[in-house]
Length: 432
Image (cartoon, rainbow, N blue to C red; front, top):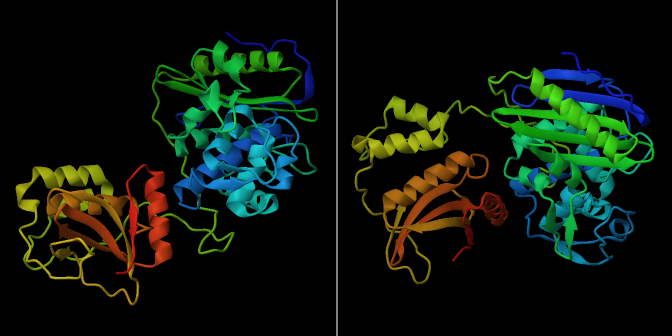
């Protein structure tokens, strides 16, 4: 059966794109590479970078953001921020994602990069890294500005990355209402979310120049479709067109298909206080980041080493299930302990910190084996963060402290921000 588009009129040039989110296969497109005004679809990129910044430890969800005069002056849709007001980043993110608040979006950009202009430059770097080759951002909110343009293809690409790159945050886009700190706000997409079966996001947009835009994602069974429309005359006609396109997508998508997740882009944020430097993440470990076993400790088999490289959980399971792989009791190495501690420390490698007197504690455990296992698991998950740190277990009256040491104060603070962003417990340890 061939589906024919209804006779709709458009407020601006029409463009559309439909993809199978699992494979990325294009199921339908029309004017998909025409550069048009994205309106508040722009906030998808603002939020993508906000999620990245939190995960990278640049900023915390609980950071108090001071609202600038510029942010407070942004026209509706708005949260109603006041100049000089302080509000947690998490509430700004909620307001931008759910209500599509322009003042919140500007405040997010300024909090992360210092100014909206600098944030727009990061948006463009990130867009390029994502393969959004025909997109240029000039601001964080999407209000019409000369040269601020994107395409249906690029916005569909961004929507797919939001779903796969930051799944822990994606639920924001399905909320009908949310607490934005100073008040509760309602979703700008609530009608579509409530009317289309399986819809769970992503973002609406409207300006006079753009018309009514929408990037929508819906899941039915094992299938997930993303559809994008630019140029609707009204929210009602736009929603009807997106529903038609999603139906088309579900009718064309196979029930089963191999999931081919998009590759996360190279990091485009701040590195050691500088901007614009690209850091390419190495997804495969070519050489061990950890010290060779001590003479009194049994060698770990090649199979276990391979498991360590391929996945933390598999490695830990292998170690737990293999009695021969568990370490023997080690001789205790006497070292300085913090006030109140009554025992000694087990040091996994000798320190050559050269004045790096700070560290972090990630918990207290019942046995030294449990503490060492947690240190190993954390180090594997955060290779960049703990690349130069020393893993150390300290026996105290309360149990066995799992510590990373040999860090600068800045490195320790960053490590805790990144671990806390993952929901892990962490506290910095200063020089004694």
